[in-house]
Image (cartoon, rainbow, N blue to C red; front, side, top):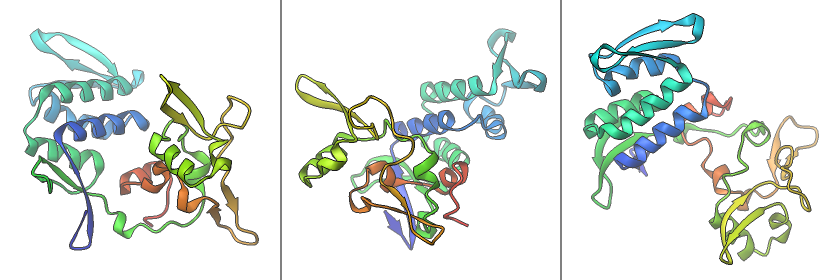
Length: 233
């Protein structure tokens, strides 16, 4: 959705919590962020004592107990605690703003659902055609059944040859890309990426039919920054 030139996405509380968990898991531990979130998620009374030699910290839990967490474990602990806490939408919006590094506010969707609107800033994104996302990011399990059906409807058997399919009871349950035809091995990089001759740019040879995960990238400015994309520079 665009409002006054700004691109926004709407998330229900459940979707927001799932997105936060995904953010915590897909990047290296975000130490400053996790530390700032402790009072919001675990409570202002929670005491954290850093122990840099062990790359983690001690948290004072109930009844005076203490427990050590690496920063990776802390991210998982915060995500789990947030899921169980059911915070007010105003607090969840503040957490979203901190996690996604973007303005976020409570609101309602066009369907009348309560949730959070988050500005993605993708309206100022400009792809530089560096090909980095195609060459370095993990995308193999992000193919959807809708992607498969779209390629099938377009008669693109050449694309389907590179798709691994799992069927259950005769129906497609999940898909994986890009699997070298005749093997169970993932291709090293995207087979549809080509370097433009005499230019320092790349192009996608199936751009109009590219997978949904590619269409959605980078999604937010933060995701671009965390994955080395320079499209917001």
